[in-house]
Image (cartoon, rainbow, N blue to C red; front, top):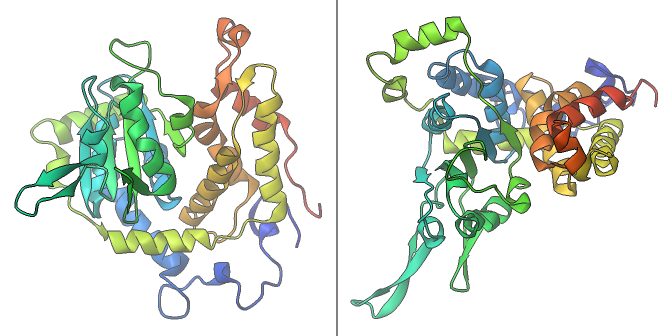
Length: 348
């Protein structure tokens, strides 16, 4: 197997007939819909979301990448730039169960996970599921709730299950948490604990739209919300099939080692007092698989890892006091590491 920085260099030159990643058909030739089917369904979801979110194709693609990578998405920015709109648009594009939670300082953990209540007719306790029992959970302004309430999401995000009163309940796939948060400098916010930030596959920032996109927004959002006209273009079963396709994506050993080297470099960087965890490496490779699949490739290249390094790694890192004084942000550190680390080359 030869390796390089682009394209076919990272494919297996003579893949075995049973190699699952080689199945590209959308019909009955292989398991699941194949890459052709993935591209078709993913494009429909992307178009549906972009009909609501103007001028942010890269943000929409990253959100779709996280969905197919079985991850969770953290959307951080100032109020009014479309964080909740993006989360709702992605949720409404898929015909599955969706629940929204508005995080407030008085929200309790049981308001999220559910509670056991006594049924007088049956004379026994029965479990009343909370909003986390949905395929897509939209957590609005998650950092306005207390750390105790935020921690209610830890088990379900990592293990896809909820434990209440000693009983464990499984969450039905696909399961994705899309949370929005305001910058911590704003009033009434609590910083997310490191353990919770580490469970989010990626963090994105919406940013302000350009003039053309904002003008288009005035036309499309002026009289009614485009969310009201948005109808599902895929089913939960479709998403489960697409996730299976992404799982079969081929990642060559040099690309896997490149991802490990990139994550390991954050643990030794002098500007960081906390580097990325092994979970970050896993999330980076999973996201790279989905990113490649959206490009209609059944193999991952280093470019995929590089494109995802900042959104997947930066929110997990803690800068030193000196770096904060010098305003060296984790995003800059990761970008510098991407430029500095050697990329796998052919034949190595």
